[in-house]
Length: 534
Image 1 (spheres, rainbow, N blue to C red):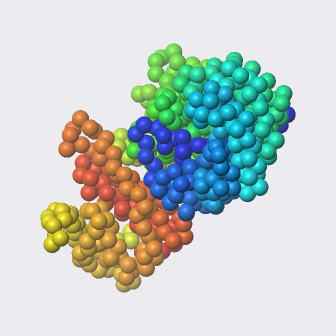
Image 2 (image 1 turned 90 degrees about the horizontal axis):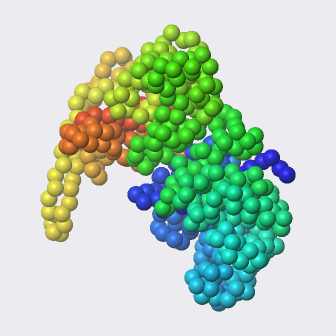
Image 3 (image 1 turned 90 degrees about the vertical axis):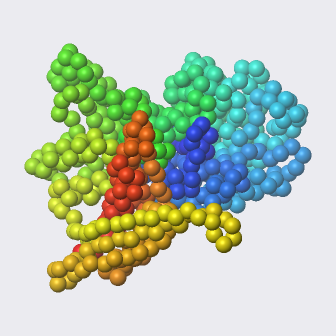
């Protein structure tokens, strides 16, 4: 049996079913690219034709370097051929080269939910998978409610998955759809199925309704399954899905399995987990295993003393392996390795004994205390580090800005809001002096107006800013108890025609001021990475 376990991420579909989660196209693209860089084998983009967001995402898919891009759908409907089913046609018509189709394997659901006979359901599975195997590079079958079906009627459940397997499915994925199966039953049933279908063709898809999704997935691997489906941070409807953030280090560090995630990429696990939370505009779970802020935090005399002598006493792994860090509460003994790792990710090579590293560490801690978060704002962190270690050119100096919003009825009787920004900036000239410019611009909201005014002033000096665009903008209230006086954090994602994307952060009691700080970093980062001189 192969020691390689393949990872299949469903965050962009299952995760979007989480209460309170609503991905836009920019979110889906950023998450897919983070998953790809981590080393996930399969990334499911969603269900083509199901909603406008998925349609827009599949129309302009992310540029993946190693992961396979998957489209999700269902087996053909009863009473029509697979080639004449609109849902299958939509799935096969995307740029995705992997098709994942869900089908019924529980006889109860076939009879009650679909209202068809058992033989017709098997034909639906067989026809759909045959066509998918012909049209796509890979076809997968998600066996919905498989464990419930197997408990009620094991013969029929096996007939269903064997029909998909014999029709050409690369993977047969056994789904614990309502999350009610326990690990010992998962291991037993997967072991039974592996007697009929090779383990290296079996996958597992678990929900977390009994808090056993991770345990169930690992039990399935023990029984022979070699693909695990799950989501980042365990997102999903009801209680969530298998948490890949926990699955990956358990497979690699505890069980000795190989995955598409390298040891170096594993060190980015905490970053990717927190990046998702930033995209969702929510605070990371500090108690999350492996990646939480408290996962390797120690408080109390005996524990701290023991950890300082031998970390293995209270730490089951080295935190650095997953990109986290040890925290000794009420002390200053943690953080250097984490900063060094982040510098390395930013392409900054520095001696760990560099005399300015402690200063940078203190600066990062102070900024985070103020509300800054650099997990989802790599560009701002890189600029902060470079300013502290080696300096960054000052491309312009803001003298002042003013933003006005006007809400009124237009000539057509429509209620509209107009935003106008006025900026004064000083730009260094070739002679070494400063040239002042005042510019006025309008925009779709105050931040867009401010962005337009700044770049309107800078374009004559820095033409490379022409193709820079603001892709996403998020505001998070950090001190909700303060009401309208609350401190806010603004995250801005920018991009350009090369396909590059970068995120920046700003914090202030004034949302426009926080927005300007994030905008400033975005502009400076664009110019610096392009090698532009002030």
